[in-house]
Image 1 (cartoon, rainbow, N blue to C red):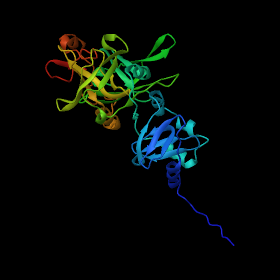
Image 2 (cartoon, one colour; image 1 turned 30 degrees about the vertical axis):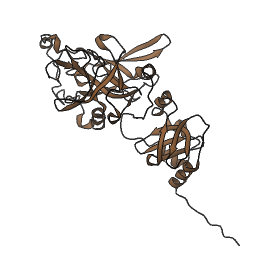
Image 3 (cartoon, one colour; image 1 turned 180 degrees about the vertical axis):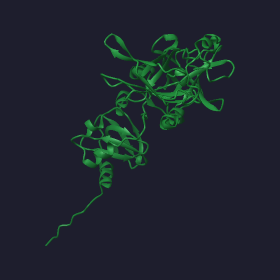
Image 4 (cartoon, rainbow, N blue to C red; image 1 turned 120 degrees about the horizontal axis):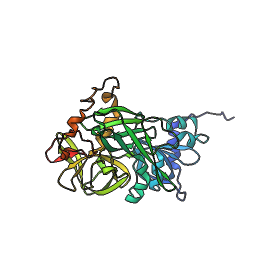
Length: 361
């Protein structure tokens, strides 16, 4: 007689065995090539630091990156939807409980990253322009951008410096161009004047979820690489300027900046500097006053550090002096300041960067 024997295989081993033997070559989707030679085609739902989560239709594979030789997304616009994709809706009925629980585990951070595929400026602008906003205060205007669909916005500290009445204007695509909507309920979440960054939260968002951008990797940025900026220079909303990375490590006052020849003008402050994958690689914040083609941006690694450690820079609404000189301005003193000291945001307050010949971004 034969005796039945039950064999228990750990779920992780089963999943790994499955993707090592599963091979599809003619199905349209994202493509993953393993070091052992197998090719997997499916939809990359989530990309994390050490793993990819791939929907192959019948289940979701969890693939360690150290087992992958290379992978590529089908096209840019599918990539943009990856991090904003509702994994609960995607997996629902087809995934096992273990895969579902693992795939829906999110990192505790506010921003999104993805290894996006490079394309043209035109396609990038079409994909990311709705994520760029105009920020207004009694002192002037600047720019900013959404880093997630919950309404968190990055901008320059000097755009909101000494102000508590802040408005954010969102531009949404419509049949006849863009529709503008201004939100007056804006919360200051965190500020770091020493790297000129601020984190805001737009409250009361209704309707479709806001578009947001992915943050890139400064380590993959190369000198000579094409970049472009979107902002509101001199009140000219949603203006696009392009150029190249002149250098990726220009030092000013102990901090590193990206230097670019893309035009940075008053009103661009706090806006994003993109690579050709539509990833934010910097936050525009200053340029030399009397010379063109000398713009500077705060590298995205400073932005990530600031957001990840936002509790250390949290703004206390009950204490206007929390942080650094966050008090109501003296209007008469502001008006008396020379015009050439105006920052790129158009704010007439003294910029924090005091190197001769340049102004705030």
